[in-house]
Image (cartoon, rainbow, N blue to C red; front, side, top):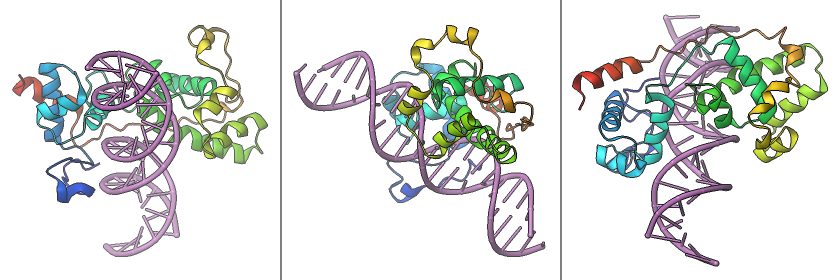
Length: 208
DNA sequence: AAGGTTTGCAACCGCATGAAA
DNA sequence: ATTTCATGCGGTTGCAAACCT
């Protein structure tokens, strides 16, 4: 992604004085990192203002949580993580934030993207190959037809099953296909224009 | 090499929920 | 009890990069 292009997709460019949209620039990232390092997270709307960012609080929060946080891990979803994602998804459906809580350093957005771009696609391909098992195609259909999370919850389980369920849980629908499932590695996506490490070291150098 | 298509991901949007006033 | 505001969530979109013809 080209984070350097200030207004490439900025619909609000004309009224740019107010709210910026679109990709974050390195400068904005640095401002946000710096500000949070010095003042903590606080209320996002006022944080955005105080930091001098022409962004909504929502946008700042998202950028921080999904990208800038020091503990966020990006790229290289391990086979273990992948398996866990599949198990938890089979159990909870599209409850991405809930799934993300079981994968330290991973964000709901990343897991959601990963599911949609890799796993879902691969399951669909496998299904086309093997004439498909009924249970599995049900799950895929749910996502293709955009079923609501409440529907998913009815089909799978609810929060009560939360923590100890994993002990006696066996993945209902994917296990049969794990044989044919080729993890689409490498999933390296660290080739950002600049790395978060870079930003943090910049922050540490110039920070305060 | 050029143009078209597909893929992957960052970011936005709308809605739901909860806390504070 | 009601309203307002902030946050969190899931779905969706836009676009650059990668791939294909």
